[in-house]
Image 1 (cartoon, rainbow, N blue to C red):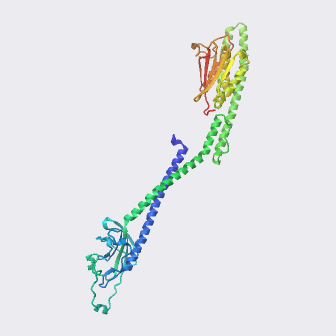
Image 2 (image 1 turned 135 degrees about the vertical axis):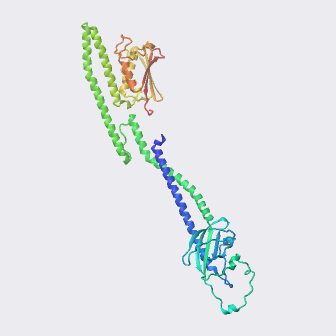
Image 3 (image 1 turned 120 degrees about the horizontal axis):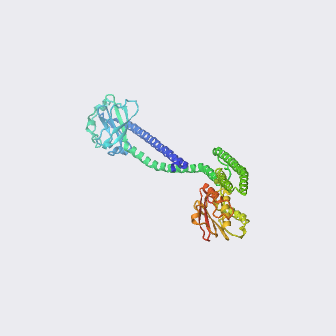
Length: 485
């Protein structure tokens, strides 16, 4: 059932959209960050290339050498993460101490003046390197005649330090003076930086997701609040607490409220017409039934008792049928959606019945909580309770008690008297059409049958039992309003 909730649907949709957007945002941030890191690395490697090109030169023996070391100390640490190399097409000439015993393999270097080329190379200790490669022309200055005739000075201790490799010492400078310069760094540093950024951005995006989903929940709650107001308005109309919906709603809901109020207007008009037709039918049949009753009485006086009895029998059936259809038409017209308070209804009926024969001699006891109501039309409730109280008046000795109480979603009304009661075997027959257990008491025998029809039309129950004060107990069970009084 939760899947049918509009609130759950909107929240789920918001959560999905927020998650997807933040996922894409995280991916975009990681991509942009990595590109900027690589851009910064390229700038750094280009700066190393410029430094390396600026310190390259020839020594007195015509060999390529670096006049000074590059400033970054990682070039002098084995596997330090920063590497440089100088080579020709025939082999490596110089390299940083950080490369240790590894040579960087560079194929098809760019031509001099062609700019810097970016590559990924295999480095020392199974490292993968980001490399910047550039070709330069290093001009070789020829020594003068005087410099050639001078005896070379013996090398100092520093000059006696062996070159990086034996192959380098044996390489002769290229004829065109072209050298390939390579600076590189370990890609693991880039991966580590990206991983740390990802470790920082994921919790932040999680916090953003929670905040955005909470904001979406508030938005859904505020946005659907007018619908809750509309629902409570419809409930009030159904329970009879209001006649129409309040038009003070957002613009988007005003057409719905207007159409609903028009529908209620149409139902009210149909209800009034149905009640009017029921009344017209009752009045239209009253005169013919009265005339037929008088005709039967005339036949009886003229000695035709059998024919008069048959006419009375059919008249009672016709009256029963008309009364039942009037009740059904009244209920079908919408009367069952009403609510009627029990205490004022019972008090009014007791006051009226007390004016009938023996009514003022009876001790009437009414117990009903204030505000207790039944989901029954006022006319129908008065018809039911009026018949029950009138029967109690006829059969009681001195006391009639009426007790009303609520039990869950039902209202129970107990009408008890201290009369002779009804034998258990006759209790099922007393609700039959036109059945009178005692012909000495005036009545048509239709009262309880009508009561039964009305009660059943409201999905209620009518039961008989023994009263605690000695007579009959009638238990009337009716539906309670959906909302407590």
